[in-house]
Image (cartoon, rainbow, N blue to C red):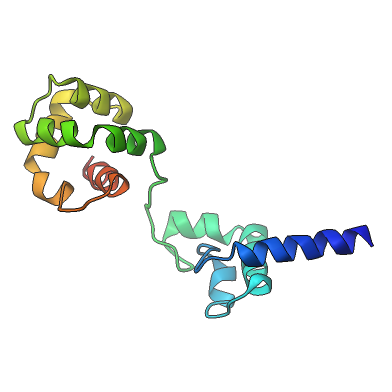
Amino acid sequence: MKKLLLIGAFVLVASQAQAKDNVGCGLGSIAFQGQRGVVSDVLASTTNGWLGTQTFGMSSGTSGCEKGLRIENREMTTFVTHNYETLIMAAAKADATSETMISAASILNVEPAYLAKLTNANFDSIFTDGAEANEVVYRIESLL
């Protein structure tokens, strides 16, 4: 009886937390594509996990996964969030000596001069109007 109540509570919580496309990619995601609901999400996610198709798909670009996607760099995203304006100014000037550029380069494990030149040369594509911190980080990392 306790197990049944626990499963019921899990399903209730999971149904409240359900999000669109929340199982990622992999064979399970393909098999249950277009189906919505907790049961299909759990089955798709479980299939991805048991068969290892999500991991293989991410490294090979198969099973509905994109090859070469990076895991979000939370440290850099937090840094850009708190230093957005000063990073823009340093990038616009290609200022490798600014504290912001030095710190950003340290997080990304590159030389400040390299990062300054890179962000300056690609300024318009990195810092588009309304770009959020995670977008800026993704754009910078994709150029590294």
